[in-house]
Image 1 (cartoon, rainbow, N blue to C red):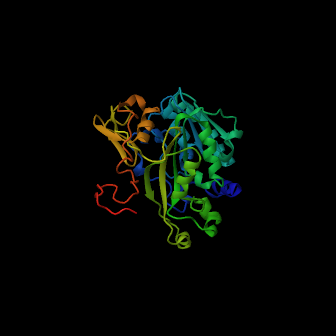
Image 2: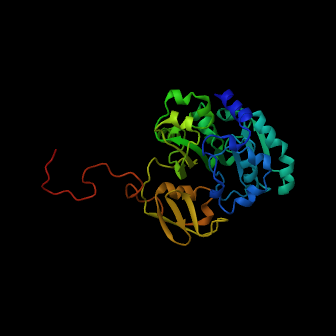
Image 3: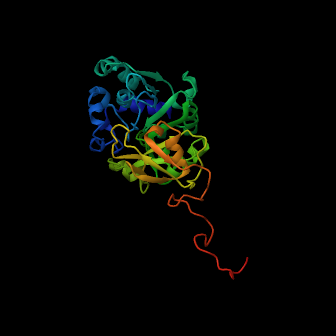
Length: 347
């Protein structure tokens, strides 16, 4: 699979227009604050962009960021502007042709930005321990439509968990299926190269995250993918594919469910480019200045990370009120939400 991917992205694809799906992000979906940063990236780098989402989480100034499967470096150079001259972005990729493009324009970008804070490493994302990267040294790790291409996704998650600092996060976009992809489609070279063959069934991804230290994956955004090549669409049949962005925090105390401790937060409106609300995930758009009830996990995702200084925290963990209402999980027992009659029959 490694050789297949190297050939597809190194030789067969010459630009994003060669792709056969709508995986590449629509320019109209790019937020206004990010467009000026993308405009400062070399055209050849941008032309070889094969991502499926936006992997620029907020509040990166001064952070150390790792980009898994960086390709020609578009996201690296966007992130370089966000972390600033006191931060660093490291890109990892296995494809010679892609890295050659990324490195050939490094001096050009340094002149554009006024600083050089990026470096590129050749290697496999399943073997991060071979790259001489210090454990617990990255604030944020990102990846854009690459994990699906890996033949050993568990090794990727284990490796990046090791490299994250406590309170760090893995913020990434990828392709998922609404069911398990059958073997004949998984092994098809074109479907695999187009990020469909290796796409995980979304529930299998959640299980994999739990098994590798990420107790509460949070879905940030998602959209269905259109298969623009009719021959591929016919082969895929009724399987639906989605581009989705998740954030996974490295916080040991996270629980596997959203538990209610009577807590709330108030967003101060101080994260740059987010004055009116802070979006943690698809279900947590926290309006500035307004008390927002949260579960214990959400509390920790804000309190134990780089976001702590931008919130006021109300409550603690001294009293537990059961499962957090509306989190998608409920008390499993019959009649749990209503009182039981005194003359109800016993078992």
